[in-house]
Amino acid sequence: MIKTENLKLLCELSKLHLSEEELSEYSKEMSDIIALMDNIGDSDFEYNPIDMTNAVPFSELRADKIETFDNMEGIVKNGPETVENQFVVPKIVD
Amino acid sequence: MATISTLRKELDSKSISSVELTKEYLKKINEHPELGAFNTVCEEEALSLAKLADKKIANGESSPLLGIPLAIKDNICTKGITTTCSSKMLENYIPPYNATVMDKLNAQGAVVLGKTSMDEFAMGGSSQTSALAKPKNPFNLECVPGGSSGGSAAAVSGGLCAAALGSDTGGSIRQPAAFCGIVGMKPTYGTVSRFGLVAFGSSLDQIGPMANSAEDCGIILNAIAGQDIHDRTTRSHNINFNELIGKPISGMKIGIPKEFFGDGIDDEVKTAVINAAKFYEENGAELIEVSMPTLKYAVSAYYLLACAEASSNLSRYDGVKYGLRTESPESYDDLIKKSRSEGFGTEVKRRILLGTYALSSGYYDAYYKKALAVRQQCRLEHDEIFKKCDVMLTPTTPTVAYKCRDNIDDPVKMYLADICTVTANIAGIPAISVPCGIDKDGMPIGFSLSAKRFDDAKLPQFADFFEKEHMHPVANI
Image (cartoon, rainbow over all chains, first blue to last red):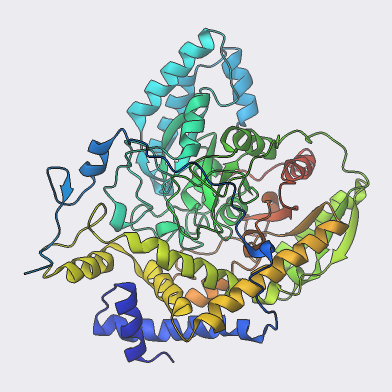
């Protein structure tokens, strides 16, 4: 069973907030899920970082050049709070 | 159900116009809200695209998808049209750009009818984790259409569009295709650009077609595939997905992996899939028993890899530049935490937590690295199998579509149901699901064919051969 304290740490790392009730519910569910994942420990395969069969097949890099995006207005429109093409967030430094 | 190839002939011979066809589909969409297939219907835009297509046809222009009404999964960015991922987080998000596949469909003159509902952020196998429309199975409205591309499957199966785009990270095209009695194909990883596909598991995600025939899947793939400067994982290739259709299958070899026919597979599904294999054998193909020992670790490896990637990919939703923002946050940190907690649903949170767990210090080697090792082994096993055979044949799903409430509260049961589809994503190979009958309650059954990487054209070939002798089941709506 995943302890509540460990789940709280995972929430912190994941930037999620769970209520006490949710913590207890997720604790049980996450324990069941991790028990399912545990069977991977029975496999005796070793990861070979040099073997490229595991790699995503990246094609060649494209040229590193700046391209102007023609729909800045469209980007700003999606901002929850904007002022003069800038995104507003709560004060970070007093 | 009308196929794209049939509609093409009708449009080109002017026995029907694209506007008439589009109106017909829009009418059917409006008549069937109970299917919950669409999050957004683009009536005005669709009709204006249809008018444009009719003009082009009148001028003698033609391309395979010109004037064909299609539906698009709601995690594919459509410029100026909401792309919600069926999440509260993106409920009001209007992309300022098109996904590459949308640009390619537009270049062919396809008509976009709307955006189809799905599991939230493509995380699920029922489409019931959607925070918006919850699609239902046209064969039985009490049953799920599968997921995560459940809205696309319901729309095609219910006759609400000619075909649709879905996305497949662990079976999200093939499983709903099997549940709804249609054809769905996930191409080789790297054939279709993921630019503009909202990311879930980037090393596993692929966009693909869901349609009424294997040939239609090939037509759509021919339109959307190709190397893209915006997606570095796309490969240069010249696959003509339909070039082998009609070629004989006699003498070709079909691998039957014994592990896919074990106790977890429903008897009626097993029988229908074995009968499909026998059909090929009776027509000159050779069946070969093959083995995939890594299958027993596949679900764990898939969930560890996909969730690890999702936990990273979904970190972009912080309530700052787009997406839901909580009201009155007390601090910057509070803004991020509360926005994410209010915007994401239960299943998305579960997967972010699992991914964070697998990547966290102390667990990385035991989970994430082990999953990478299983992935490596799984790819090697596939390479060996495809040295012996042309395609591999398996069930697409362990059961037929289940009732809407059946698995939703049991994530472990839900994850285990992905056993038949995840290996294709882990190995990056192409796979197609084809209808092969119905169970005693009239629910569709599907079988899957897979091939080695970039051997995609063999799948429409084999699927089409089967379809010529076996009618797809038709939903009674």
